[in-house]
Length: 501
Image (cartoon, rainbow, N blue to C red; front, side, top):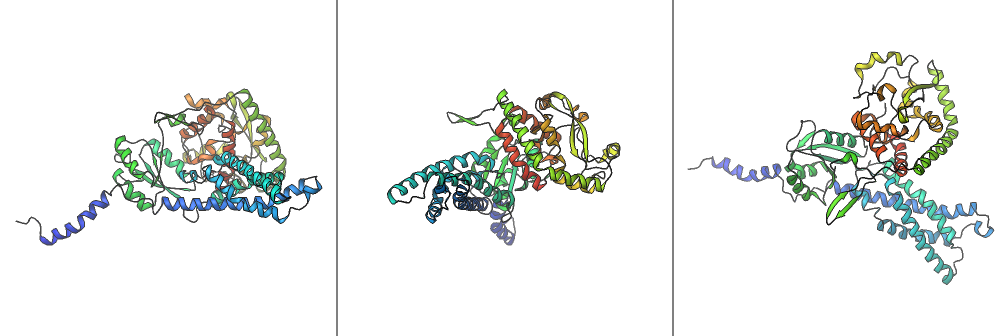
């Protein structure tokens, strides 16, 4: 005897496999065709194009600059066409060397397209390429009589390329962004506090589109788009290029099996346990197939401190001289649009918890501090910090200065005096600093900075706890190279205006 009507049974027989497959897609589903592969191809094309343009520019400009600065009449003569033809013909050699250094392979495995982390490899690749070109030029000069080819001209091309190629990459990824394909879609596996922190960092990147969380046992329902079984299908539907794995209550073995099915199709990043101790200088050590992470110590030697302070004095002095006309224009605008002084001075907590007077361009009306209690209920920051998005105390000129962070420029005077550094922890107001406790007080071992990890990681979009963690991480694992990386990222952060108010 039939349990179901024959027509209903026929419909179920036809549609049930499709229903099951949509709910539990097979692990071999191709999740890369719509998202990850497109991002990889586009990033690679853009990167190669930027390098070629930079190398062409260097090939043409290098000999001209050498002619302009050379005191040798023969060297200062305009280079012949053979020199330019040779330089342009050697561009494939440079591209091949950049490829050997992994400068095209690694860029597609990152969430954030930062050029700074590739600078060392770029310089090395250009040096080796220049050496090979010098050998070819020597042979061409000796055997074919091309006398205009010289080591000096090749060195000039390499020096120009060392500046132009990174700048071309910055323009390709920093200024142009992902306009043609959109931001990189990212899914976070797991929920909870860490997953929310990771999502905040992802949202702070203009090149990233946070899709949502995936978890079998989610903590909360906000932005949860599915369970672990649905991850391959979700990656396909949203064109996801990368999955970031955080801690989850799902059994690790189950998560591992699912991620193995995605490897090679969608990029996978894993947030390690004890991530608070790991920095960009940490490295992976292999122990018979078992990966181990090294915790890089801070390099706060006497020599390192001297280098940092010397760099602060030189750079702040140069910028103050160059920015003097801007100071004058800003002073006129501030005085013309509101009453009060040009500079705003506030007591902040510096190194070893010593207070100092920090300078900024005044962006608020003269009685702003007296009105703060009226706005306490509008505070958008957690912890001891105070920030209101559309603060009525801010002047029209001050709003522009704050949005572009130009109000911070007078702090260069504090840097020159030694109260602050170009890079360091955020300088807290004395009352706010008194609320810092425990491990977070390590921040007071370093001079506060005009910019820092917090500023380039999202600023006001991150929580107070994350601010303290980033500042602790900076002090605990400081290096001069890290300072250079933060300074490199600061202009693009200001340009995008992310987290500023």
